[in-house]
Amino acid sequence: MLRTTRRFALKLVGGGTASVMGSGVAAKGRTETEAVERQNQSSRVLPPPQKVLKDAQAAGERTSSADITEPAVNVVLPEMDDDPDVRRTDEGYAGEHAGQLGRLAAAVAVVDADVRLHYPGPDTDAAGPWFVLEPLSGQLSTVQAGTGRVQVTMDYREFAGESDGEFSDCLTEVRAASDLSHPYYPVDRAVFTTGMMSFTLSDVETAAETLTVTFDVSTTPATTAESVEDRFASLDCVRDVSYESVVDVARANPSTEVRDAVERAHRSVLGVATYEWQPTPTRFGSLPQEKIAFGLGGAGATEFSNGEYASCVDVLSESVTNLGEIE
Amino acid sequence: MRTVANPVEGTEVRVEPAESEGITINGVPVELDNAVPVFRIDLRDGDRRTFIAEHVLSVLGLSGITAAEVTGVRTEWDFARPEHRFAYSTGSDPSTVVGHPAGLHNPVLAEALRTAETIERGSEPRRSVSEPVEYGDGAIRIRPREYGSGLLINNHYEDGVKSFEVDPQARDDEATIKEIVTSTTPFLTRRQEGLTHWIGDLVSDIGVIGGFDDLVIDSYSAGHDDTIGVSRKARDEGVVVERSG
Image (cartoon, rainbow over all chains, first blue to last red; front, side, top):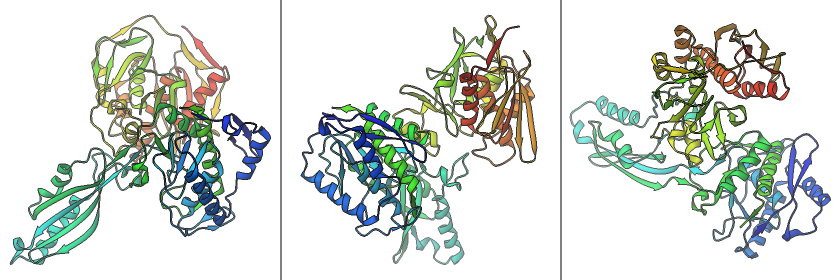
């Protein structure tokens, strides 16, 4: 049994309320003063990047040597670059991996006897729920879109003696068949494209008599081989269509307790708890079912602010605290 | 209270008679404490959730229906819609999404209610406020209005103001209802019709969920958090007044 944690609500300088973990059995005797110090240490400013990496490594080693059959909250992040491109600024981090390292810093800040960080990778045999820190801009996630691949083959021979223009028309038709469409939604507004089956041209291969284009496909639970192939198979110029699923859609099924703990933390810290899908597969899909992803910072963002860091720490620590005692 | 005599079907929903005052959607009572304002109105009661409630509640309010049991009837997912992704993420099924797929205030339901037989039992007091209430740094303001006068909604925008008069306890005139229920949500359109759609949202949020009948509402680029916020603020500050004729 994981025995968390008394909850200490601290009014922080600069506004906002953060919850800090005290402890039950694992850290008996921790006082509120210590909790305050702990919060101050995690501070509201991102630590130096090298310190984060060093502390994460140490926390990961502690996890590796601990008894993972003892339930605890397991925190993990997507795979990270060994040498992340991050520099510290007055506002936080900047660089290609600013968000990744910022979320790792938040994880490091809340690690204690009841929270173990899996770094650099997870031990999926560990007991207890999994919190996965992803670039979700403050939203929660239990679903990750899948991926597939479709090959569309056109036969040159059909165009023997025809003009280049007709073959060009064929390519245009294939490309158009891969376009997003929706009866009501303006799909050019990016907010609507998540959750749609989408196609990205990944390869063009020519042979003596054929030309084959390959699309990477982002899939939803509604995606079937037929629904992909039918888009192209009806075109006159297409001779063959072949679809294969690469990574299935992943949907976690966390318990009500875990879901509620994380939702309440989001409402408390961010004012709202909404769900969104993760657009591409990460290690989230291979973790046990008792899992939920969340995190500050957006996908592809090259900055991660001190404010996002502070919110990420607060959401994470309040989620742990809200769990109370879990079996 | 007024309810339907027989079940009525709209897009995505079925509306059935209720025995007592109040509206439920998928079993969740429509009340301020269950409203979850995001860029739409969801209702939540424990593990039960329902999404885009405002597209149904607006039509009920415009049609004078004050008691009903609404259930979602959708069976297929449309994952392009964020609320479908949300529902799937929480283990809910497609029927929990009761909003119109094209972002309208359910014109099919409005038409069905236009010709539906209704039942009236007794009369309910009408609610207003005793003094003005503002919320969201002035994004929305509600003011007292005389008994029986309904809601005067002023939707202020950059170039002017668009005003409607509606009464949540009475059936409003057909032209007003038609104009509102055929207007697309500003979430899906940047055209002027978004301003009219927002009138329906105000009927839903302040008239039906907030429970107000006689008010002047001034909206200045407000959102759902403001409409629910001002209704809660009025309640919490004790300025809600109930009056009977």
